[in-house]
Image (tube, rainbow, N blue to C red; front, side, top):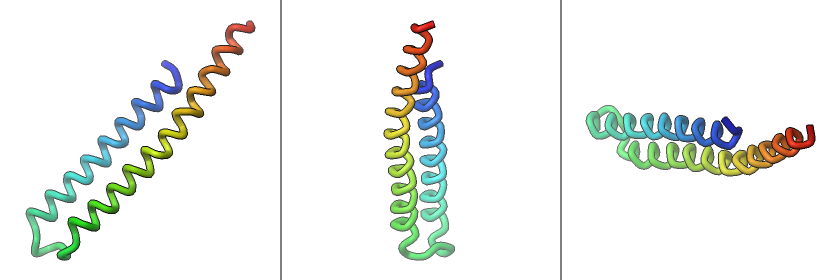
Length: 80
């Protein structure tokens, strides 16, 4: 499996886990309005959105690095 493919699979798994946490926290806030602050939903949305967006941005950069490493490995393999 290429490094690009491994990165994509890893990023999908991590993003899905973060989405699950986000879903859980949102449901918790709706089910227990007396146990959370009034701005709980907004804070959870901003925090999880920023975490997921930041990770996606880093993953985008890492994808290009992985593609470059795959090309280098293919070139080295062709030379031998």
